Image 1 (cartoon, rainbow, N blue to C red):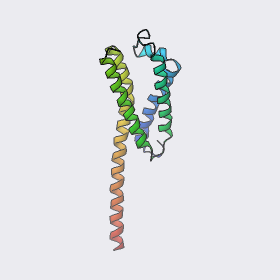
Image 2: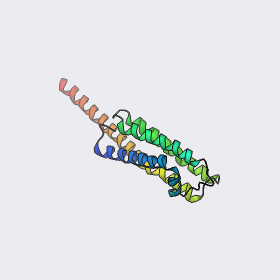
Image 3: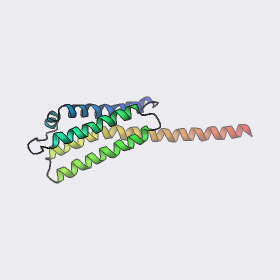
Image 4: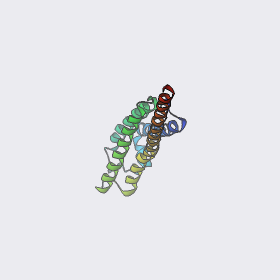
Length: 149
């Protein structure tokens, strides 16, 4: 996240904040988080363990992205997008298989979507910025070759 424009840094920071805070709560008190997401402990006795595994993954990911330099942040955002997309698909398939009710399924999907949206926007802005930087570099090269001639 270091070395980014303020807009991209804001989006990445928002994603890290969502990921880290939700994960920290999930790790500290998975039963409370299950209640907030309308997930029944009686029908999902393994869920507190799964929430803690997910929480550690997202805490580590948020810290790595927050500390990333300008060159590696794009790759990390792609990884975050892949993870969140997989989480959404997993929640959907679990709901379709009857493992979660409709409200539980949407709660799980929306937690991943909350991080996915700023990640996608930041990645698009990074791609646009890279294209703009390439155009500027090409213009400088053309201008430099014209001056030399």
